[in-house]
Length: 306
Image (tube, rainbow, N blue to C red; front, side, top):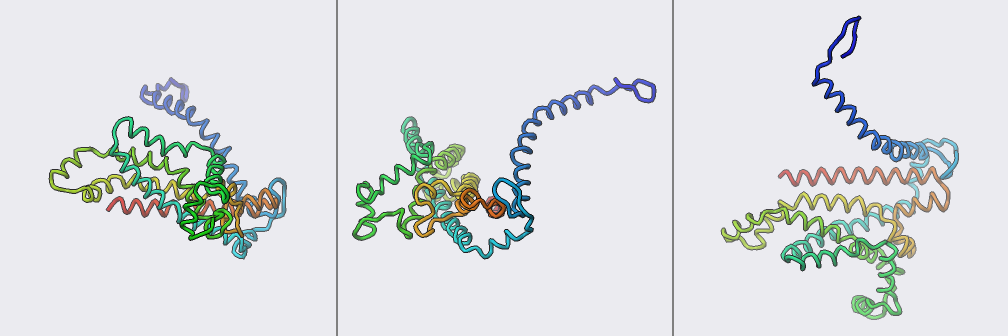
């Protein structure tokens, strides 16, 4: 009950309950909102401001307007890093998605502990740190005693191959390492999606004489498409930000053949201390990821609605 113009006004019980719920909801949401503003929105705004300056990573600098963005167009190493990143995305996003779907289809035919064991084997590399992953693969393909060298000699037609020191081999091998390392997560997503497809659909299709290929085309593929779209989107975002494997396996070499955008940002910011220019490159990558993610989402949603 409140007082207005000298007389008591009773607030309806329903409105009081709504106000109390709104207050409780605001109290629950407030920590997240504060953390989001402090840890994401504020740094993003500072990054945008930094990108218009010629300043070090820490400290003040003079305002240069759009000069950093104009400089990007004429920077040969930056253009090369964009190309190498796009090449890496082409080598990983669609192949790892198709591979994960194929593995999930095979695993889904197993039952009980066998399925759990196979899933655990595929997921095990995903929980390894990137340093362990790179050490494993450096040992596997070592030119002197690597156990994978006989296969590499067979493929190359003779002598051994120092794969991480060859411009032709380096990026495909980094892509192979990445697929081996991360594909277990995609397999789990597809397996979960396949489990949600009712078995009755397949039984009815089998009674109508549909073979496995027809069942996959008319039942599995349409119903697993939302998971496929999710995996493609996640992989696109992750692979555009490739850095760890490249930095540890090739350091961007040989001859800058594996130099990617995030490594270029790292070099400008932490090696050359060009904070303003690094911020401009980072914003370019952010805009690229956002634009491609939205575009891919719209394309995949259009495909799903057909």
